[in-house]
Length: 303
Image (cartoon, rainbow, N blue to C red; front, side):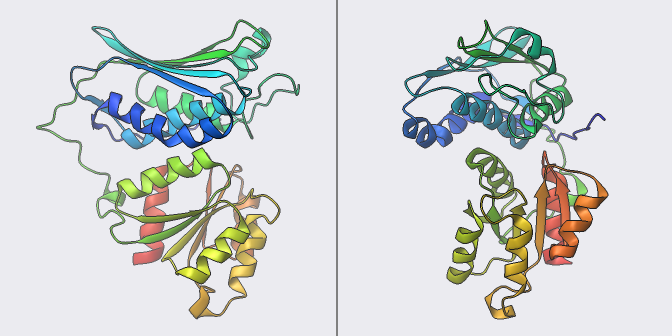
């Protein structure tokens, strides 16, 4: 089943967006003993792109590169400017991809069956998300690897749709109000996935606090109560279902009645029902549609 993404193009400085994404992952790069190099050719004018969506794309590619590159390796990000198009390349010196698997890595839920070659990551949603968002912009994404142990290069090609600043794209009706002053506790163990979601929420005015585990989320609630909780189901040790059950057992003044949204890699009704029965008010499937998430948050908080 093909997942359709809606995009809201606006003037976007692609060079600045890539610089921000690189700065975001520097702590993970340093912690793993990797080197990150950037070769970013400046674009002469802003491009018409959905900046929050493209941030998700770059975050996913960098996440894969960090995950599958051993200590001492190098990750390189390039921005290549041509008269009619731009290319973004994310290369690494990591595990590489078998040639026979390359045609399948962008498929939803596809996963490699070998521990010594890189899978698509998690449930295969990361690269599916990349492909879907890039294609929604009219672009293409390709993957190349010389073989196992020889790294990989992902190339995004986008036609140059120069933004028209005098005619900005109006916001979608559900996000026009934004999330100004709404405080959100985001519980997500994947650091880069958390960063991409938080970036989108802050873009619309939300105040976001993050936690990477159920224990950390419960600790955050003792410090300050948010207006709403957004939690991944697939958390380590204590999953999202058990987390919300623990929260619902708390008295109201400690957060027991806070509205909560579940995020999971499954879009079936059974998964949605399980989230609602556990105590969430809503369930959204990954890859996260930012506009649906924002609309759901606004509905739960503002009514």
